[in-house]
Length: 298
Image: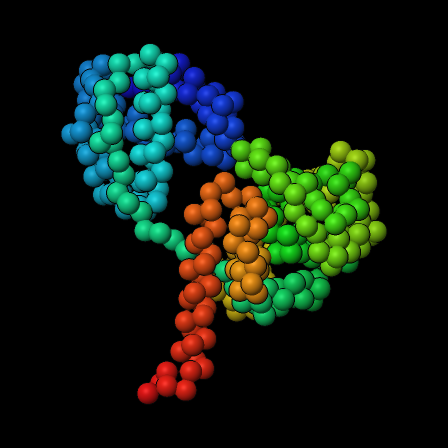
């Protein structure tokens, strides 16, 4: 029910003008396909205009499939983006779509971990079986996630030419946004120690982190590492590679870090995104107050 040419033009625009990454483009494409499948099963005429009744029916269908409210919100955003693009470029006669809104998803707080748990994760790497250079590689990766607040894709996207790490690391993040991140001495030393024992060297443009088969280290390998360590240390299920990035932010904030500076370090486009970490820290402070105040248990 949605013309393939219009769909392709919209995806090209998202990639070239909005500069969305491959994962975001895949998600938007799936969202539009979901709506297209619903239209194909619901309406008879290919030129049936988008109406509130159709839209509400799609919302109800997604709710009946027990999709998360965050998923529904993203899918509505994708469909709205598609129709607005088609309207601006006169591909379709699109009416006013101000009514096309998703249910407000709950505001999820970033899930972090305590400094002790973060340190335990790092220490536990060296108690695993395997080659020493692999352990040092894994330790270096996690040090960059926790010590520099990098996304897993950013850490694994580094090349040999980026090492040895200096005081600052130039990172290209989401939407090709570039930011400078200070590097802890401990993180730089971890990378140096890994490279000193890594048996592979593919040259300056080769990936910094490689597998035991000299292939680029993938995010799934790091996720499996955290799953193994999480079980071993009996840590909560939300302890993932990305939670180390959250820990980086909340621990900085808890030790007096400036919110605007943390925004720059994380590469957040909006301060409101970073402000979610203040709620995480407030929760921690409330718990400390309840645990330690003399009158808290009266």
